[in-house]
Image (tube, rainbow, N blue to C red):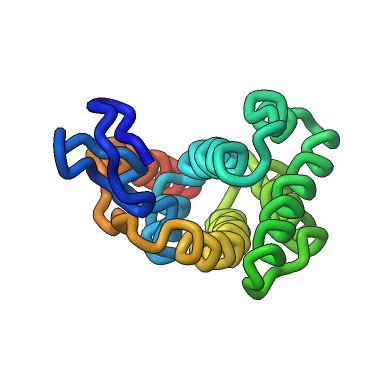
Length: 195
């Protein structure tokens, strides 16, 4: 293989060119530790989920489905009722990739059902009138996040096979930290609104 920066001949498995020092392959893996995903998803008041879907759609297109329209599939996730199909299709693509790499899968239908129903219940329950409503919504958020964690665990097993030498980013980035702070402010606002 040739380095795309200096044109020197390098090994096929090289991450970095030994001549010019540039990264010739992705440095960081697409693996997201499930504990990190839980923290980001739940404590950001589910705002992180929007980024999670975008990031994974882009990764699916880059590595497995070059014909995939990331923008249209992402947009479809926000169109009421039609989004059920797009959630299912997203989860189904991940199952297809998992089967290709002989990774234990999950049911795209059940993942869609749990994710969609728990999301819908969060929306339907607002505005929250008392602490019971808030507890119910927190439980729905946890169920919702657990679905994403199950899907991410399958994705992580695939990425371990596809990107065995890339670094797993386990720490929170500055942007992720800011998102969590915003989410905690939102959670505090919700708690104060029912007290």
